[in-house]
Length: 610
Image (cartoon, rainbow, N blue to C red; front, side, top):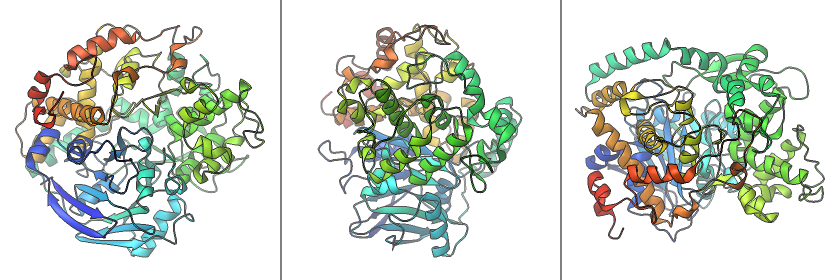
């Protein structure tokens, strides 16, 4: 059954095994929700995120690796080097399932090695091996291949950092498999601070569910239903960027660093164009029937792939496409591939570079500053040099490597950076869907769309059985309650873990969870676990000094764009926040959950003062 924790101390090479308390599992389920509770007891606000004592968790959920609907995922958690707040990054592929097959549900890594190392896990055997020969020499794809050869197990799965993680770039990510990344909040920098190049794992143990045969029948039925859905067909055919043209039409796709209402090149970089021109195949995470990953090949022009390469996802075509006014799909593919190899979050990397382009246009940033690189809209070429400089922390790239907030501050206007609580806004403009603005300012990890993809509700992705219903996309009315309900549901998904692309009902998920854990929960019990985990992350941040005054949109997002799909809309934050706080049971001034809310969720004993 779910609940096995392995603790590795890289300072003294001690390895221990523990059983996670059952009340924690029943309270928070698993993955990021459970990780927040596990990290709470040792949380020290005075400890730097990159201190050796700062833990790094690879946390799976009770459905991870079960071949259920999109259950090939796990989360990497710790205190974010990028924001200083709660750090959480969700990643697909095969590493999470492989950890469970090796008998590990949560891998807790603490301490720091004196020299670069990687961890090799083969079922019950765990080794800490030298990675001196990989440090600074191998990119994320090369590292995977080298380690697989070294351990002599071709089926081994590897999660690793690149040059950016080694050099502690605050938005460095962790890559595995065919370009799957735990990209956001800088977990790669936390891994790099421990001199940990990679975690390699191979497991051969069969997962046994609480009610095994019942779970098997349920997952088969749900996967069959998922396979027959239109959304699955669209994602398989066109990938995550399949909706680019429609999102641009609605004003959801950001362009020219959040300052332009339209981008005429959206069609040229869309998933449909990718499918018609360079697509060679698709990839899927473990057990997934959707297969949204892209395999592309470009044989001519300035940016050949030299074989099959990963195709860019929606966030990447925005980061290096619409945000820079670049309509060259080959260039975007190459930039996305370079970012992956260096191990950097494309959202923050692309946003930061786009801000540099804006500063260059405004005359604040000069050729002398950029090392002689003219940063002109529509020209992708300088980005290749800038990305390499960022990962190496050299030249102008050393400033860019500190992120958009530091870049804006260096040129006299920190508020120009489009970020919330230190995390760059994801590629869904909140002026197009007001509820998404509320998501960004209340998310525990900053401006994140993976704590709630509420914009999808505005596109028709309602969930009536939990009270998430369609409302006018611009209106603030009802958004506070709707967003909170959606966040609680998505926290359940992030604790299981399941992918947001799976259109699976909460009742179907409940049935799967009950069969997996031999529970008999009702829907409200499961949703309350999501709410409890959401509040746990809130308490984590409050302990670190979170202030409600920072729950606000950046300056550029408060400027209306009248000639596009946003129709001049500006989110009414005060109305939405007031309703959100009332529904959540939080104090509007301090930000803390009220005493009755803590009692209702069973969290009151965690705080002596509220």
